[in-house]
Image (cartoon, rainbow, N blue to C red):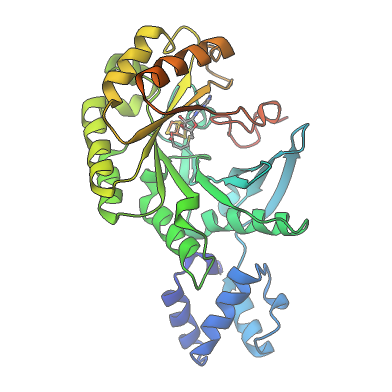
Length: 347
Ligand code: SAH
Ligand code: SF4
């Protein structure tokens, strides 16, 4: 039988498992501290638990889901892409972006993605399976350990790697619980962002949680015909209903929503389309995040020029819609937004 992944467990579930091993109540806290405070990967590293328990844990459990890893560093050394092999031979990618004031990790939630957005390398590769919450957490702990080598800390976390987080909702929410629990990683919810293509029922569930985790919704087009071509999920979750669900989110939570919009040369970047986007989102507590499309294997259109991106941004800001232009990072190592597709593009 395969060993159980400890990172898959909530703290209550871990306490249950230790009870089955006839351990006193305080052991759960010690084991959790080893994993989430000291970031141990291996039971041999635990100093505060008896050897007999280490042997029992070793027999039934695994801490780290990552079977093997490779990393690729960008020329400026500030973007690192990790290629991880997890259970069942699945390969996923995780990206660390270092800025002067923060270190952000971009983590994957699925192996591939079933949503098939035409411009996204992950969408182009199709879907294999959901990651478990422990496999998602394992990416975070791996990057934390890598940063600790240079006495650095992880400050921000974005669910913007491979996959659609709202299609793996229970695992993603369990990961967030373990990330933010003061007794576990104690990572600030406000420093976490979930990005979704817009799965409306899950967006509503998320709204009901009133979580402090930030929400980003990927729009990429201001009208249904074009959005359905670029983002096939739009056929199930069309703009009118999606924007209504976003409005419910901002009304209920009083939190700003981010709309992501990748600008594609001659496709969705005209002045008229900027004005259509304004009509769609005006009056909402929102922020628009623009990025020039990154190249991916199966999509021929280039990203918009810097001038076009600036002009598009100006139309939005002149109208009073807060807007930022996302820096393109790690393009030469295929670590940019929408470029994650296992190692197939990295040779
Ligand atoms: N599935 C989620 C999160 C992962 S994708 C989502 O779609 O939101 C993270 C972000 O990268 C999304 O906004 C996505 O639309 C964007 N993206 C995908 N392909 C891209 C590309 N080639 N260039 C720039 N951004 C891209
Ligand atoms: Fe999936 Fe997001 Fe890529 Fe679309 S953009 S295929 S939803 S990962």
